[in-house]
Image (cartoon, rainbow, N blue to C red):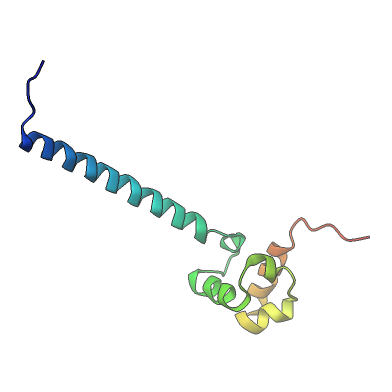
Length: 98
């Protein structure tokens, strides 16, 4: 038996617990934020943070972008080769409809 625990000891233990909890929460928030910002657009050469934000602000989602033509993508990106790569990436694996 260790006997009664002093108030100072309790305070130190609570501080360590609180700091560990704060660290764990901030770490998980960082992971969640990274997951929310990942998209198929990250795979496209020529699409960085600015162009990705531009596309997301203009069209709202990657799913919405899948309905766009190359010309519509180019009207926002103002770069035909990047618009072509985005279009191809968005439609990779699409099967022709019968």
